[in-house]
Structure formats: structure tokens, C-alpha cells
Amino acid sequence: VNGVLPLQAQADPLAVLREIVQAARPDADLGLIRRAYDVAAAWHDGQIRLSGDPYITHPLAVATIVAELGGSDQALCAALLHDTTEYTPCTSAELNREFGLEIAGLVAGIAALDQCRNASTLGQAIAAVEAADPRVLAIKIADRLHNMRTVAFVSPGKQFRKATEAREVFVPAARLLHLETVGSELEALASATLSRARHVRSASGRLLTAMAALLPPDTRARWREEWLGELHILPARRHRARFAAHTVLGVPRLAVTLRRPAPGSRQAHP
Amino acid sequence: MKYAIKMTGSVQQVLRAMLADPAAPRYGLEIAKLADLETGTVYPVMARLETVGWVESSWEDPELGVRERRPRRRYYQLTRDGAEQARVALAEISRIRDKRRATLSAVQPGTLGASL
Image (tube, rainbow over all chains, first blue to last red; front, side, top):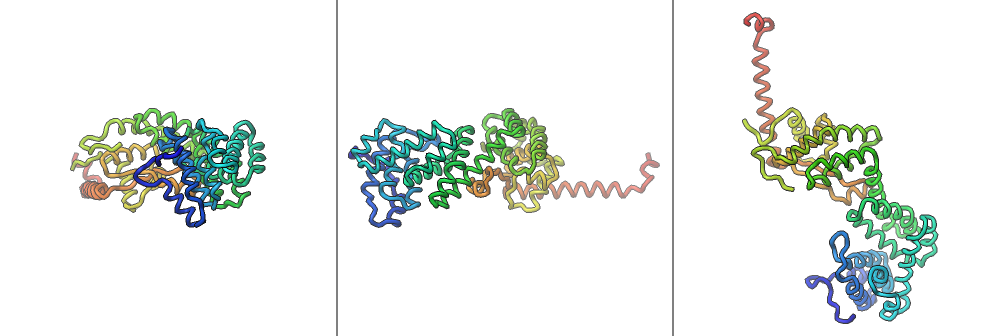
């Protein structure tokens, strides 16, 4: 894997990570971290996240969070490599040859945690999380934090699952490891996502969603999100039902307005 | 005078409400409350005002919503040009209304019927 070029030639993608690591640990092995990045970038080459970013931006962001938590060189490398064995043909044996048993073991631990989570209930997931290596757990928490920061790009159903799991499993895990800032941010992100999801599923939310479908296609998402956001402000269900009913009455006029801009108007910006 | 937008009663109410603090960004529900209108009236008015460039709307910084554990809000704000034109239009409308009221009150009670 020698001679792999960084994805972006214009700026070093590792600049931020390097700065954080050097500030925390002047003796950090930056060469090793660079190599882990290059290997991960090579394996993920061509993969794209739902946000449209190259996949490698995710492990890099996770490693940056781990660095902010004061992670060791091994933990940072494992963070950079954490999805290689699951989402690329790269094997644990290959990581072992390239980076040694410790880093390969951490990556395997992360993958194992994912496996048990996929196959089990929330209660079993909590048990598995509590039994895991603290470094594995910290990387997994950083992984979920970055996923929650970018949760807007996944489907509403998946948002709900990820947020529930974040709140039930990863927030307590973060508290367990005394990662207070990460725990609070994760809790806030999960709560915001869950409150949005709750309104999407309510009768008022479904009514507003159905009516938004009558608007011109390129405007639907905006009005739907705007209205669902307003639902959140209203204290009681009857207020929300009243809001939905009144808003719905204005939809035909809104649709006409959006289709035909007023005469003599400037060109509307989409 | 012809305005960029038809100055219906609800348009006037929305503009008066927003001109009370022209620089303040406001969300739809807030405008409805301030203007004493139903949201079903307010959103189409906001869409029209936006189309003619009197009002601009944008999402708030999502981090703000996350901090308060709620979805992000859509905020409306008068443009500089919109605030200016809205002031002119509302002033002219109240001038016309005052004039009409003055004309009516100049007529002595009962005399209007007698002259018919």
C-alpha cells in the first residue's frame, strides 16, 4: 500500500487531526497515524457517504473526536481503520500484518461490538457495551457521535433507530467512561432527532406531510420540515391538531402562490 | 398606486406585525400570533412576500436547535427594500382610509338619508 496519495492534493486532510494530536502528545507517532489514514483511504477509495462526501471523511472525523478525547496512537489508528474490515475486502489478518496485533485487535473489537448489536436486543447491546475494552468503546462512541452529527442524510426510520440507540446505549456508555462533553452532545443530538421523529409519526405530522405533497415538488421538503418544526413548539396535542388543521386549509392557496409568482414580481429564487 | 403585491388585509396585518421590529427574524407560528392570523393564512402570505422579494427566509443554524433539543426553524425577515416598500404602502393605505373616514364623518347624521 506504499505510495498512496492523499485524496485531496490541495490541502492536507490530516492537518486538523495532526494539530490536535501534537498539542496533546508531542511524542505522538504521526508517521504511524499517517500510514493508517493512507491505508484506510486506499480501502475506502471510491466509496461515498450519503452526504456525498468521500467515505474516508467519516473515519477521519471519528479519529479527530478520539484525538480530542486524548486517544493513544493505537486508538487513533483503530479509529481511522474502524470500518475497513466491515465495509471493504480488507481482512483482520491484513491489518495485523500491516499494523500489528494491538491495532488489529481494536478494529476487530469494534466490528464484534457491531455484530452483537445487529443480532440482539437493546438490553444485550448495553451488556456488550459495558463488557467491551474502554478504547473500543470510546471509538464506538465517537463513531456514533459523528453519525449523529450527519444523521440528516439517512432515512427517517434509520434516524429514529440510530437516535434511540444513541440515547439508550451510547450516552450511558459515554457517562460510564466519564466522556462528559461527548455524552452531552450525543444526548442533545439524539433528543433533537427523536423529537422530530415523534412529530413526523403523529397524526398531525402525517396530515401535514400528506398535504405538503400537493405543493410543487421542489418546495415540498422545505414546507414539510418547516411545519413539522412548528409542531414541536406547540405544547399540547390539541394545539398541534389545531395548527395542522388551519395550516392545511391554506395549502391550496399556498400551492397556487408557489406555482404562479405574483404579476410584476422578480424571479423567485428556488 | 400599484404595489408588487396585492395589499390584502392579511398582507397588511403580517407587514405591520413584522415592521414592529423590522430586523427581527421570526418563524411562521410567531408571525401568526403577532399578526393575529391563522397559520393557513400566514404561510401563503409569506410565500407571496418572498416571491416579490419583500421577505427572505432561511433555516436557522441547526446547532442552535440541537442545543435546545428541537428541530431547526425556518425564519422570515424583511429585506431592506421590502421594509421600505411595506412602510410606503401601509402609510398610503392608512392615508386613503383616513381620508375616507373624514369624508364620511363630514356628513351629518341623518342628512345623508334626507339628500337621497
